[in-house]
Image (cartoon, helix red, strand yellow):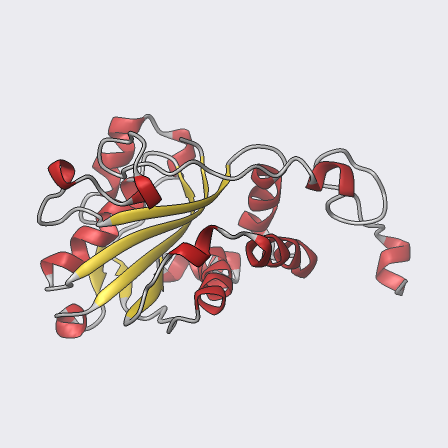
Length: 224
């Protein structure tokens, strides 16, 4: 045990037990997410967008690993405002264990995290979707490129907004750093949590408007 652990002992983010940021009892509560179509939100094999739901700018599919419930919710919320290496390591271990990702073939895809505006990133000191996106890219053995998308306008915290307002706020929120960067390419856009999907849908539309061939969404957790 190091000096910091003696001064600031680690507690489980759920039950406050001493010993670590997630006790074994609460670790066992981590639940897998269900697969669903990102357009109609009904069950879909592997999260592939139903043929009847597809449009020119829609996501081609969606992968969510965990259900956004205890303790996944507490871990992600803790990571939202301060990056704790031990919490990231917990997620890394759980991502590594999941067999869900073994069924997908994402050859020639590039993983792109949802960006923050530069002012918000400077205020927080890091972008959690960028940190967590790297873990997913390594797990899928994909190129990782945080420079593809740029968030061009500040939006209020999405968790505090009703569904219609989230969709409205995220419309046109992103642009490409290099306009022709998406042409003919395949992408996975990554966000930490899927709620209404407004963020991932807006990012996908921005990429497809600039000629992206395919765009899948990927969220660490889903509240659907």
